[in-house]
Image (tube, rainbow, N blue to C red; front, top):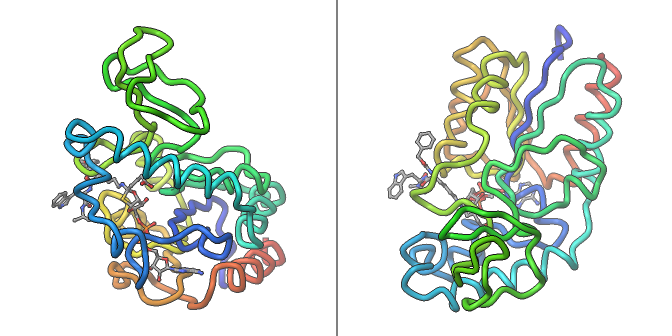
Length: 235
Ligand code: BJW
C-alpha cells in the first residue's frame, strides 16, 4: 500500500457473515437459490401473505441470535478502534455481528432483524423473537408488524450519510458482497469517481469487479485480519 489513507469507508455484505454460519443470498445453496425473493423480500409479498414472510424472518432471526462474530468482524472493530483517521462502516447485512464484535457506528443500509416496523404508521420497536401477523403495533395498534429490513423496491436507509462518506473517502473497501444489488453495487464506482482508491476483499470476483483498483480473494475470516494488520502498520 502506498500513501496511507486517512478516511476509510467499508461496505460489507453477506459473505462476511458466511463463516459465522449465516447463509449468503446468491451463492450456490444461498437463500435466493432455495427461496424466490419475490415471495419473501418485497412489500407485495408481505401484503399477500404476511405469515409466510414473518416465518421466514423468524427463522433467520433465530439463526442470527445463535451466530457469533468471526475474525473478520473482530478485525473491522479493531480497525475502527485503532485507526488514527476516520472509519465508516456500512453494512447491507441485517445481522448484528459487527456490533457484537465491538463496532460502534455501523450504518445498516438494509435495516436490521432486531427491530420491528409498523407498516401502517412507521413506528419502530425491538423485535420480539417471534413475530406474528396479528401482533398489534405498540403505537397505533394496527396488526401490520413487519421486520425493519429493506425489501426490493424500497429505499435503503441513511443514503445521505452514505453519499457524504463516499464523496469524502480516501479508500473504499468492499467485503463479501456480490455487487449485484443497487444502490450498494454502485458505491465503489461512486467513491472512485470522487477520487478514492477501491479495494475488493471477496471469495471471488464480484459482478462490479471493474470498479476496483485492487482485489484480494479468499474467505473473509482469513483475508480481512491480515489486511487490517497491514493497514494499521502503515498508518
Ligand atoms: C464470501 C464468503 C466468505 C461467500 N468470505 N466472501 C429490476 C427489478 C426489481 C428491482 C430492480 C430491478 N433493477 C434494479 C432494481 C433495484 C433493486 C436491485 O438492485 N435489484 C437487482 C437484484 C436487480 N434494488 C432495490 O430495490 C433497492 N432499492 C432501491 O434501489 O431503491 C431505489 C433507489 C434508487 C437510487 C438510490 C437509492 C435507492 C433495495 C434493495 C434491498 C435488498 N434487500 C435484501 C434483503 C434484506 C433483508 C434480508 O436480509 O432478507 O438485502 S436482498 C439481499 O441482497 C440482502 C442483501 O443485503 C443484498 C446484497 O446481497 P450480498 O450481501 O451482496 O450477498 P450475495 O449473496 O449476493 O453475495 C455474497 C458474496 O459473498 C458473494 O460475492 C460471495 O462470493 C461472497 N462470499 N462466502 C468472503 N466466506
